[in-house]
Length: 256
Image 1 (cartoon, rainbow, N blue to C red):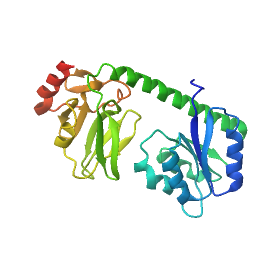
Image 2 (tube, helix red, strand yellow):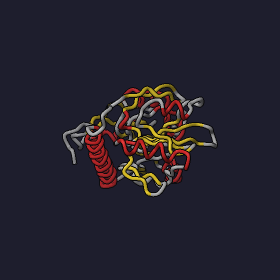
Image 3 (tube, rainbow, N blue to C red):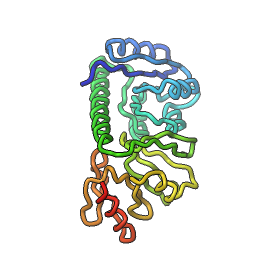
Image 4 (cartoon, rainbow, N blue to C red):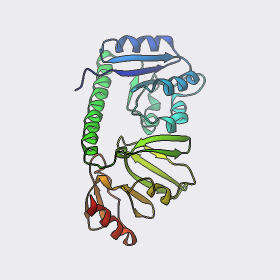
């Protein structure tokens, strides 16, 4: 575990005692720095976007809005790795919290061993992320281009490096392209984005069918018509090359 790195934490809870308890528990971890706290949901949104915390403790039940609604409102603006721990006295919210991709769940009042378990899971998670980043850095040394793109999303523009991008998928139900990143996050692109616009960004982007475009630098092998990608995309099973795109994909793959 990498213990010399500092991780920023933000706490949002409408009760001062809740913030105090969490702050006290977090003070036991030298690698944790509390970047900010607030009892207001609206202020909390701005605090998250300003401080870009690695770990967020978020109360579910607040007067202005619920923590679930707060997270939903800004989820398309979160373009960094952030783990969310919902902090509440209401166990009924657990399933919904998990559906909102919460990293963990802490019930009030908690015991210190329960808090320790949450923090252990967090440190294990960032350790895996650090190892993944090291793998990506190693992979980038093999890539002749290390390009950075300014990609238009539904909320504005985001800067992405080529090695951060695994593949693009078109969702027919809402007629949008999505880009999937190495941290597992999927970002919705602006509505008028076309496959041609994506392909023009890099020679490494290869269209494999009408709805999918892959970063060829992550292509480990082609099994029949199925694309098998390197980690962290190795579990993606439905990347199937259609007949009309097969030759162009093979040609690009052979150039690697």
